[in-house]
Image (cartoon, one colour):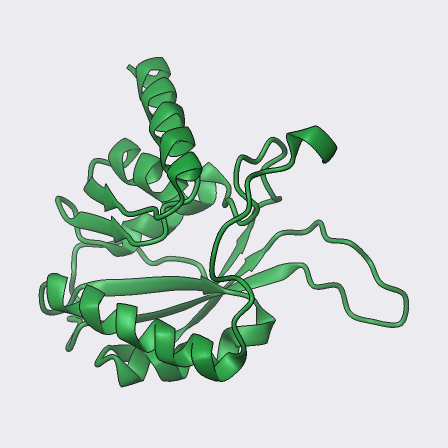
Length: 187
């Protein structure tokens, strides 16, 4: 990547215990902002998968399960399994009626990593367009780690309102520019 490497971001080097506490705290704060029955979806890799379901439940959410994002492409390591998946730990803020007006979503999503990423953990736009559909039509999406803005862009393109929070100034700027550019092209 060299000169084109994405800017660094904070918080990616926590041990499991500190990460679990930190995640439970922000998940509890996010739950206070959500209406009853609202879904939560949290992307996580294999390292923190067990801690993510704990943090979700400690924060008061009901853990509903785990879906998989199969990236298809990953760096192979001889004698090991490919780490080509991320996991979507999801739940709800209390009861989640089965008759909500949302589609049946797959348990495995197959999309390659974006080729020209502006953030190290950027997700494919189509993946996020699929994921936001767990929210009822007309709902509001909160992304407390907006990064490149993909979730916010996906939400708006799918007809939702959205709020993104990003603590790294450079990523906040890049996300705003990207969202404005993509929405102008879509208009």
